[in-house]
Image (cartoon, rainbow over all chains, first blue to last red; front, side, top):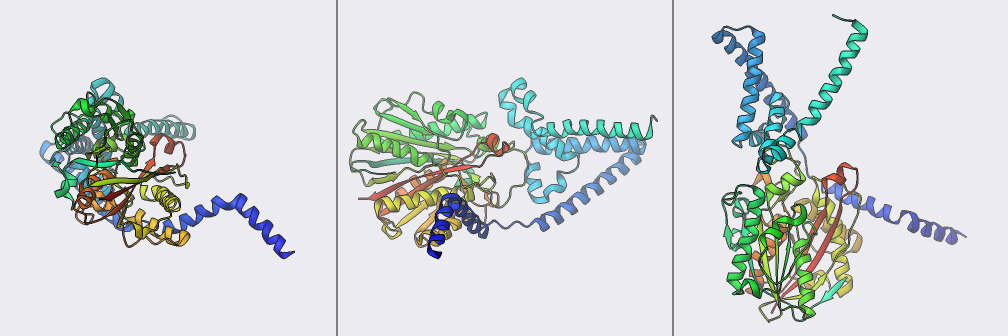
Length: 167
Length: 330
């Protein structure tokens, strides 16, 4: 009797679980040889490089304020333009991607990452010409950010309007 | 499915590589190296076409065959519509076949050519594969200048072109047998860990080859997989030992690991990949070993991930395939 049950179980097992069992076995062995990833180290580097970027931004704002005799708000705008330009320029001469490998995502999180994604897409597609290349590919990576940024801005604006009214 | 050949020989090979492979440990086995990824052309795609052209011209020079004396040219690469091969091979040979098996194309091309030669339809055939790091980055991943952080399991597409001439006339190296693989789906879907995706196909083809031929790993002096990387090759060793009780650790290596100095070239991460990766090691280094009779029998397993970004975004698994060819020094 026991033998019979064992056999039925064995056949059912083969029929329904055969491949499944093999795959989990494979995953088990493959998981033993996963590439080690030092996420904590990356995060700490990104934390500090991001912090240094913030510090630099503040410094540039102060410098613009002092030497160009403009308001803090105007100075901040100029600083953002300066950062965007620098990111685009460093991408164009092929340095920015190497800097990211060293300083991690701290360099990508601010507006620089956005400029970098657009410039790199443009560089990539320049061989296909102005229309089919640069024109249609410039926002390949940045497009999602722009689209969902605008959409979410609209939603939050509506919420603000409904809750707080105009003004 | 395994085939045996009696009259198919490897006449000569030509290998052209880019700057990253030039820094690797096998650089002295390559025929021509370049320092710039553009190879003097205006775009990376045109650069890859130039690579193919260069390899063909070099092989014609080495074998002494003229354009119109080549019976068949088999080309493959990773570009959409395998354009690097079709543009690079235009005007060469009496006939052309373009094949696509992702990174397994190098061996796939050789098997097709060997079958034609064994059947006496043709006398000689050129098999050429190419890949370019930047064109495949552009096609499969991010823009080339985009600084996306890659995980340590990621592999690095090799830049280069490798061509081989298969012939009916006797030479020092014989193609003795080949095993065509099948498509394997082990429900893997991480495009940044190709070693893990392709290891099952390498295992499947290797086991099929051993079952069909009745051979053991000791029969070969060297068993090489194409581009599994350093983590993928560990999976192959372990899985074969655990499930099939086959121990290949004594004479097994991976072309992706051999092609680069993994410690010094940090951007390579887990190892090289691309159709040319296995071809460069086989046509450059292994062919030299076979000619000098330092090794007698080599089994080359080219692994390929049949990967399309589109299907990964549509939440499909990545399939893989692996073809094997056995080379023998005589």
